[in-house]
Length: 331
Image (cartoon, rainbow, N blue to C red; front, side, top):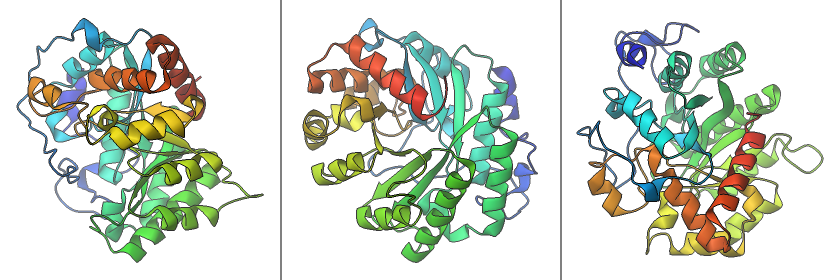
């Protein structure tokens, strides 16, 4: 893992010169970490505890997979080896690193290439709607090149979609960027890792443009779902999967989502993620981990789903892992 840490600042995947690349493909002089804006009230703290041990209550009874972890962010660069060690201790044996722009996606590829831990690492490649304002034809060509060069590492197109809550990029530009990334996923027959905030209908409108015989020709997961029962029902009817984070564990904020899990989403369509360093399962972990979520906290999400479904933790963990292996073609 020392190799990963040494390369974080200076050596990025050689698909092209990532070291001088902007977030979506244009070039500039300096390389720095992706500065994706944290979710509100979830600013991450770089002050961490590299010797933190995992309690028995946090260990999954069966190996599970984190489908969305931002461990390519700057506040993991000093102790990523220990983060992965803790992940393994918690029986989180596979992690899919989220790509949110071209530099960030390139760094994710590099981390996967240099991985020396027993945790299997994969990644997505895409442009988050926050960065759509810089998206251009060079970006989509670069995405295509990275994905084709690293088929055993890049397992999905995304994180892409629409965010009409923050609107860091104009909505019409978000739609154009998203549409092109969906087309690329269809072209390359890769799953979509989707972001949606207050843009349900517009997201569906873009996806439906690419339907063949009444359905999307590639798999799709609604990452970090925070929507309504009706929205979840529609996604399930369309054949999509739903990704849940630690929010479902929060007593107040997660109440509606737990009802969605219990009443709407079949266990066969659920996958889980930390979306770390964001989306803590509980504030007690926020204090314990000095403000930075980690993949080792993923079992809390699986346990909550087991409670919602009235199933054993092991049965749920096995199903979630099987869903993920199939969805991302990891088998």
